[in-house]
Amino acid sequence: MYQQPVAAPAINSASDAIGFPFRDPQWVSKILIQGLINIIPVVGLMAGLGWTLATLDNLRQGRQELAPAGFGHLGRGAGLFVVALVYSALVGVVFLIFWIVAVGLTSTRNEALGAIGVIFILIAYLLAFAGGLALQFAFPTIVLAVDRGGVGAGLNFAQILATIRGNSSTALMAGLFSFLLYLIAGFGQIACFVGFYFTLAWAMAGLAAVVYWEERNLAPGGGMPAPQAMPPQPPSMPPPPPPPSA
Image 1 (cartoon, rainbow, N blue to C red):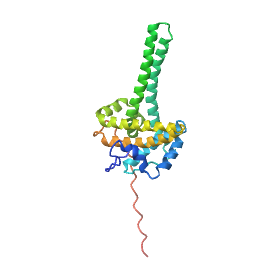
Image 2: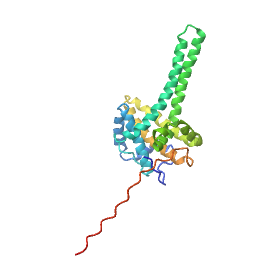
Image 3: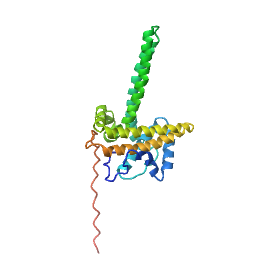
Image 4: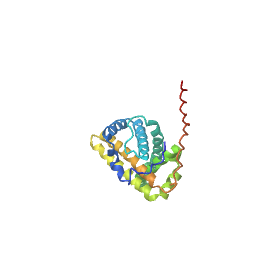
């Protein structure tokens, strides 16, 4: 749940996200556990995204430590997973449309149409690459929108775009380091591929720091949805009066 950032920032620049996970004295065990969870298809990714949001809460409270690893953040990460899946599916649909057209054109015996089909194949891959890159750069802003306003805010493409356009330097810097984190995480595949799940956990922790930095550097209002209201706390009951003295 969204919490107002504290006065003293724990992350002073987007680049701090790279080393942030190592500030936690227990980073080895937490990343190890979350990395093992990442191996589980779908569920592991949901839990990891929820872990990112929980770590973001810690940063807002001025605590430079990772959230406890485990499945406890699964429900919270499910919404963010759905939003990411929808955007990824849209990129995939665009690619598929151009690919189907390309296959249809290249399967004809007409050389001119075949040449056009080859062009469509190139366009399909170019759009898929550009769409994936754009999604990666926009992801910190999407994470922040989902954390503040839920799935609906994360899927509000117009609002996401308005936030990025109104805070272009901040949003693009956050996107750059989000992309860099997952690019570095990709090197984990060198360790028999399994290592990727642990470097992915490190990248998820770093993403929390990127989102926190972006949130603190957005223009007033920032184009973000208003924070979800915290539930009112019931008034504390006064202590019972002392028994009368004999």
